[in-house]
Image (cartoon, rainbow, N blue to C red; front, side, top):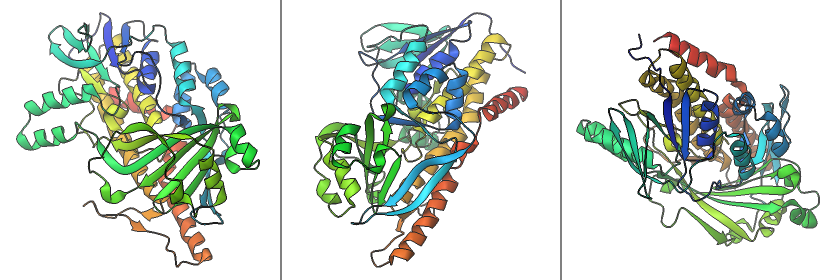
Length: 452
């Protein structure tokens, strides 16, 4: 039975003004007894990145929060129960590309420009986030949690949520504190989760005007369809956004023998397209895309090792989104998982604000519900990336390297047959994304609360 009732307003501080933090703030704003402050380290709110995909359940969450009409405007997406083509796959590392799989999903995938999505969220928030508030540390006291910012100001809250991304200051402080009080073996595990680890994959992102591509290739598939151009150790994804006015392009180059090593250089920076020669023997569609891009933003894809908990031992600090489970992008689910985190955490904190359920129970239930799901999606996303690069993931858990699926000496029918099986594997790993419904999250929250 809960030991503490909550009668006075709950002060929730959210560090991080990205997608997950803003969705949480919006969801919590529906509860009048919860006071929400969003603290963003940057001087202005501005999402880094380009295109973003939203699967069925994250879309349903946004609809329940009253965002569906605005989201339709920026995505041209219409929800349905029909199975539609989400992506088309081609083997493109040869002069004549081969179609080998069409991923059919229930309702399809909503595609948006990340900046447009963030703008929709900000426009619906009742209060403006606090910018230039970079968290340095926090201290838990009997009367609340005091936050210390880089500008030498401070603030107080009852619950702190770290939605501050892969290099989360909240995660660092939380794990260091937990490690100080843990046995040596547990402390070592906790400290190993502080710094993100390199996946061995580098992504080069760009957004180009659709008119530029249409001028040199009027019938290019990426003008109208979400495309995956695959090849050994390299692949590209391209799809239209902003009502077809822009094309989002991401080029991935994988070195799985470097996974979990230290990436040499800045993780994110702008660069000229100096890797086109590596695609010199790829099909014309790929070369045409690359020729339309003057500059890429390079991203070294890092992840967060599986955390033993998303919540502090005191159950007053929680992690959300990339701060808790930064994952590889190969199931298009990083933002969606952050949205699901926010929805569940807001549901539980709302119950704590309006009933006798304690805040610490709410946070522990959040960890119970969300951590297994998000960490499973992270594992699936890692395996999916290997499929895209024509690789089969290792079957053991000892860190072996993936094996090559398609060989140069394979005949075209043999290659297509192998790639078709790979497509089936990819769809099987991914089907959770279009079969899960928002009602299942509601039931999970109901069942968890009933067990208290």
